[in-house]
Image 1 (cartoon, protein in one colour):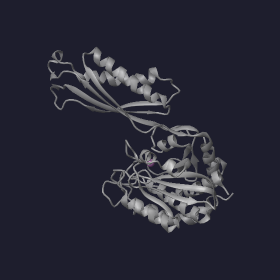
Image 2: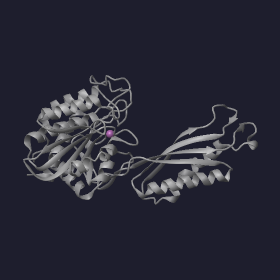
Image 3: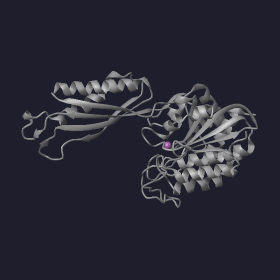
Image 4: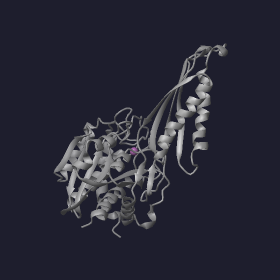
Length: 389
Ligand code: NI
């Protein structure tokens, strides 16, 4: 088995890039330095078709195989950091106060760069590889993945399949995990305002107290999942924000609430919207109050397509062996904006083990550089699996 050893000689260089990106995090679409760094590296590998400035700071680079006859597949990495104050205490900690790579997108970028370097030299495939470096994965509405799709990258570069990879703390380095179908949840958010009638807290009978009504609504919403949803379908409704009066002795006019809805079942998004609205309105009306309800659709379900998932599993097993690839991962309720690319084209995302690092989005998180050769190797094996010469 030609396993991961082939890719170890790229590890020190990829580590250097990863740590440079880690020291210099940028947020959202404002990735000028990161994008410049990526484009310069790609050019230094002899890749001459590089398009920058897509969805502001996104990049597409094309590598032609030794025979141009074949499909174009998209390999995607995200490049943005998070507004978190780093506490990893690593020598390569963020130099920018309040910004850090806490989701490992520095590692994702470095792995795709190193794979690009390898593929641009070897070119042992038929067709074309489109490297997709996207901004603003962590942004809600509209995020970088959606904007790249809206910018027409799939059509313009003739991409027929797309593949993604994310690091996973808690999975051993050297292991991979994925699944067919829904792997990550959709993310929708909602705002709910309960409009009552304010008054003195000592005279509640002369008011319509929105605080008590909001409390009933919060409890009522718990039954949408437990009483109205098929127990084998994954749905989460969490109320996360609550804003009422600012004084001990005041019944406010209104209470503002907000929350999030996650599901692995796309049709439950419509259902949750209707049911949250119905429960809130019904309860409020019963107590003489009104509600204002807004449901905000964000990232769709990250859905792995069957054929492409099989290719991803095959590629990972070609790298690390059969037993080190879990092909039956349980869906997770986090969200991932690669979902937009999977809506536009068939494809699959896979987790690469990141070992015992802190969890994603934690201030002490740092991408595990030991995972780099596995991620690099996966991309190369995937290209060879899908379009091997
Ligand atoms: Ni991430």
